[in-house]
Image (cartoon, rainbow, N blue to C red):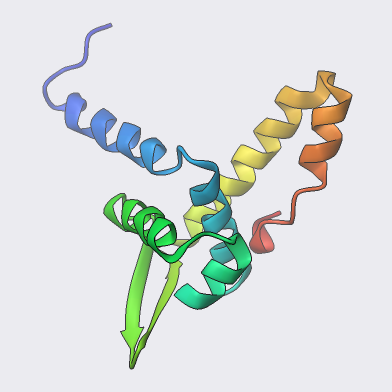
Length: 121
């Protein structure tokens, strides 16, 4: 099956969405944002242990792929998920992960010990 010219941009947008998710720290950042309505950059830095420059790069990728939004208030920048569906996507990915790992007891145990994802889990 070949893609039509009209379909190609939609699949590219979808592929880019997954590129935005394609790093463990970006997944963790999104999970942290799913836990609360918003978080400051300082809070995200403390929770991830990332250097400021690395966190900034990851947040930039997440913004570029429209997974998060940001708002500056005075000297602080706050981030939130761009849509509640992002938390739903993370929860669905977690469910799939648990099913894929069902045959590997050690990895399954480790996956089950991950922190919950917002209210969607």
